[in-house]
Length: 534
Ligand code: GLU
Image (tube, rainbow, N blue to C red; front, side, top):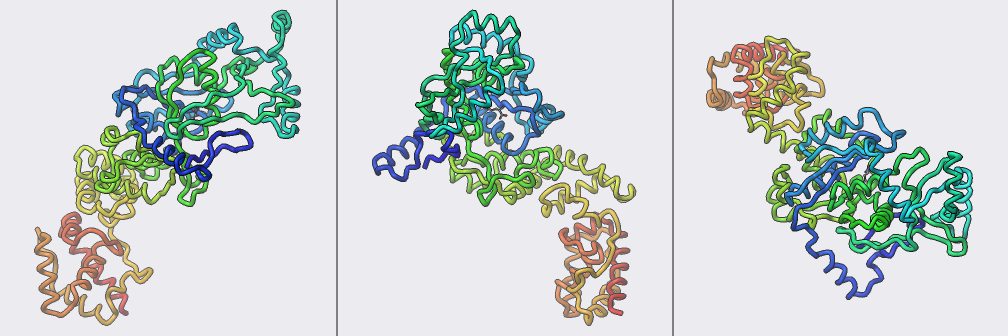
């Protein structure tokens, strides 16, 4: 089914749902979709963000797909800042783009292109269009243009193109005299009678035409240069994609309505245009638009929440692209960047809305966090990252890097994000605050308490050098000889050592805490349990 979310009142589209099609046509369409659309030669792609806000999931996905396509084909991936709309620039947004891409290891080739530094280039190309008659200066006032817009909307049917092309008919002398008087003007493209149809790699043939009323003909004459003499997004985008030799443009579906205009502009210059791939929108699991609070979060805020770049890349890669099914199930959909570079293929792109499901992000995060523990360099980086916050919280005498690494290596399997380290493992750095909030000691009935405590006191203390086997056989003996369930004994000791925290194995806890500290805690914990009885 070809479904494009473009308001139909704006465009007459040749795309219709497959619903009313004959079986033959349907099968032709589905055959068409199975064509191999993956490039067989190196491509040049680009990521062209406008620094009008901080990068979020949608833009990161666009950057990633362009990057992966370039790497997969041994091509180049370029970066371009579309910053011509100076009024909408957000301070820090440009730095955020570089920072996030570097953090995610989406490396770009060549020096980034900044459109705000290229005004002279755009001027040169506008002159070419003006002299060939493909573009013209429009001196109409704002008021007149507003009136035209209103009247176009009032037509039956309304025309979505509003300009009456009055300035396209000015004589040379009229233009000269307006220029001499310094009358402000914009430059418009003389749009073609019909926009060309084009083949989107993902959606197939697309024919988008603005709705016009032929009794009062208006034109969709795209503004190329604004009255402040700066190029519009459309002009700069097309000129730069041409000059940068871009062969494939992967961008969000929201840009689809602009594409016929861009192709008209390429045609006006006599240039070939790149292949376009419009990727589906991101939505919530319930198919709603992403809200600010959820998937629309900036990448920086996800990073602050403890999301790892590997997890984020894996998460974004699957928003509209499916790896081969056998590999996906074999690897639980966990793919590293290196692997994605090899695997990414335009044939795997999907058309439906891409659903953002936080649960999946945390699943990947846990996977990649555990993977980092197994690499000494990455483990050290993790330790470096959490030391400052541990140092600000706990006494230096209980804290050292080796201890933190050991905790991660031995007990880290319960962590989904490194940010939970402090909460999860606080008992390794400070004595547990024993309490019975929420009935955390209910594993031990009040009747049992006395016996168990007595038993543990009688048994005495952990011996220096006690290893996992010693601890286990000690508990085994106690249970066998005194008829307690293993579980009760384990939980009692665990409670004494760590308060209400669970997780680490007893022998590991004793090893990390030291036998001396463990014995002290055992005594204190037993005292608490007994006092609870009274
Ligand atoms: N500057 C546009 C954006 O912010 C780029 C659109 C395109 O990729 O052509 O998304």
